[in-house]
Length: 286
Ligand code: UTP
Image (cartoon, rainbow, N blue to C red; front, side, top):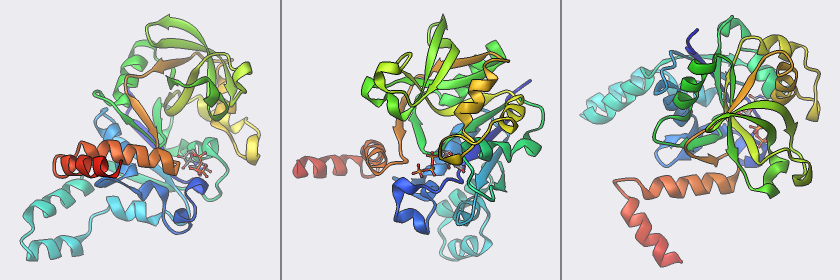
């Protein structure tokens, strides 16, 4: 069955971005000219996804407003003769079929995904964590869908991480299948470098089979009393093959101020309108 639906989880508190996230969803922080979440939405669309389900929570209404149509704004732009902007604003709200589910209690990533069960039904689906911005020629999700088409099972995106960083990732024990594709034999959550079974860390893109929902239901609260996706995947890999795919691209963790800054500078330097000027400015500073 085709991967037609994608879940974008945007209900977390964003504590690493406090105090900004007291009143502003971190998913709406700008990355040069667009809010962070738009990169995941565009990646999903460019990967052939037909329906996007965004998981939100209290205080995240700005996300829903952003992808909605604003007749008032369109009227103002029309009056001002701003036809190009008007066109862009219309295109934005017509991007794709987006629906929203409110996670009423922030009980973890696993719980957030579980709230989409009714809309997903019995089909494979994608999950994108909007903090992870991946810069790649072919959208990462599209690369993963191609791997899914071949193996028809769960696919996790992995990347090689520095050994000192294992404590920040789920690390897989890989069984090599082919170039860049591994079977996940074991998944260890945030191990000390000496305990890590490899240097392949799981990042925020997944293709999951619908069986994950039963597994999530059966997963007791773990770290921070949250339902952890990693715990559910550990259960799942006892019943169903879970593969890992080392994607082709560069990932930025924009969920932290430093990661967000790195992504901002990298993307801004490429901007055709002001990239060159920014480069000169940065040279002056350094
Ligand atoms: P994180 O662990 O990065 O948490 O969530 P967070 O709240 O976004 O950020 P920090 O750590 O407090 O700074 C991973 C993903 O899971 C989603 C988040 O929105 C993010 O996409 N999430 C997390 C939910 O949707 N609901 C939750 O209850 C928890």
